[in-house]
Image 1: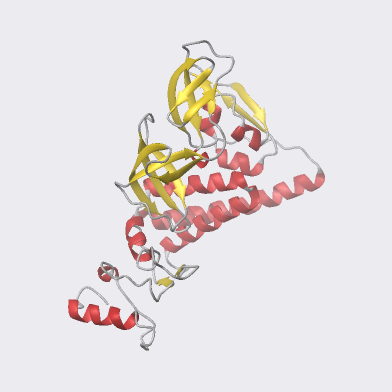
Image 2: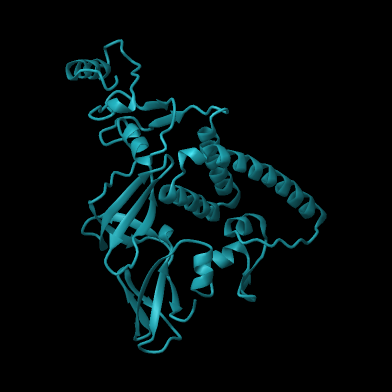
Length: 319
């Protein structure tokens, strides 16, 4: 089906494809034919000949089969990777880097992988820059292999090495211990997990991951936030405090449950969906990762609940 397929012909093809007794089992469509084609009843396997740069268009394609009332337990979306196509080199490298980080770093790798996906969702990649970016990725991958081999030799020998970097992802991936510095002073020293889970101030917390922040006064040794009241020992009564939530600790709930929010933006990224949620009390939209089959759409009312770690509590001068 394509843009010149008549409405009558389109309906006939859809009926044939959705009839399990009909011999038509493979349907080839262009993007111009994507609207109004609901194939979930009989189809659970989609192959992209190429991948669109627009995430919304990719979402529309996958949405023909990856939707409510899909009877299959697993929906598979595949795509061809052509070595001579710069766009594919970029996408393939991003997927492999994300999966490698998650595999090697466990829960911390999940966070870094989500950050890579979030950056892609927010900024995208200009088509004209694909060739240069693909070449740069190949160079970085060569550097990664050299670095991995070097680290393997150093660890096997029990040698100590010092790495200086401005990249938090590189620091967490490579280092056993990290000394975080700011303006020539050491802010915090510890393992990657220490700095991510137990930051000493907002600067350290922001450096190693995204935050959803809300400010308020200390009352009775606690800070009230839209997601509940949390202990704030050691702070003066009335002092302005900041509660900083990791997005991974928040869960999207049905409207009417938890704190009220609204979906402002939805970006499909293949392995996950990136949602921006606007909620009262938070200065910026919350960017949350959800499974690829998440059904929420822009404009939809949702609830927000705390499903993980309690927030970090910092003073207003604890930057």
